[in-house]
Length: 223
Ligand code: DX5
Ligand code: ZN
Image (cartoon, rainbow, N blue to C red; front, side, top):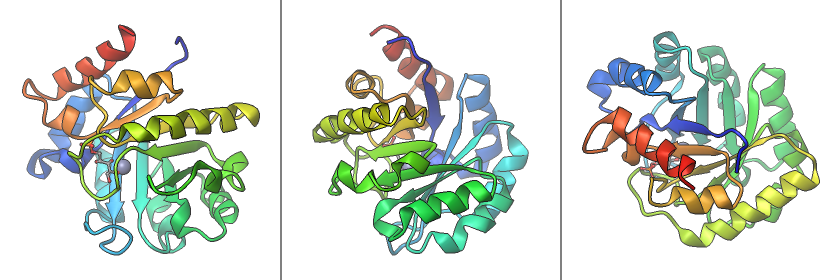
């Protein structure tokens, strides 16, 4: 495939004592976006970062900030995250009874609107709001933690969402998140994904962040 792709390191596996340095390392190694996993301890069991962290990251890099909201009632947090400097705000369809209006609100705040779904949620749940999405994210693990194993049964869902976007003539990114590494990326790329989130494969790579990013890029380029 020749269409462009983006790599979005997820800072969930970063060393937070050295977060600024690690983000700079990602940027120098050719990362395209920085993925920020926001978890509220309700929608998912883990509890992570709020707008305060995004505001600090915004000052540390010029890369787009791809903010993944794994929270109940995301509507309440859209404005604070937009003000903090998020580029994209991605909400879970399970948390948005009126997903189309949520995506409209995200766009009205000057951000790109992303829509995602849990592994157990069928792709059809995206349909009503998909025309308003700038990004569709297919989760390839149950959200909550980095370092989990890729779920191969999600490949068919990625292909299904690819078809749905193509049918709409949508130029939205098709992102994947969870267990993405040099070993799994060819399957999701072939299914039509073009934005790749990775935490452990980048931040826990034995040879460092740059090697982690290079291994993912090489795996795509050698397909
Ligand atoms: C999972 C998060 C992911 C996570 C990915 O709930 O949404 O972004 O950080 O971690 P890896 O790439 O290690 O599976
Ligand atoms: Zn994520």
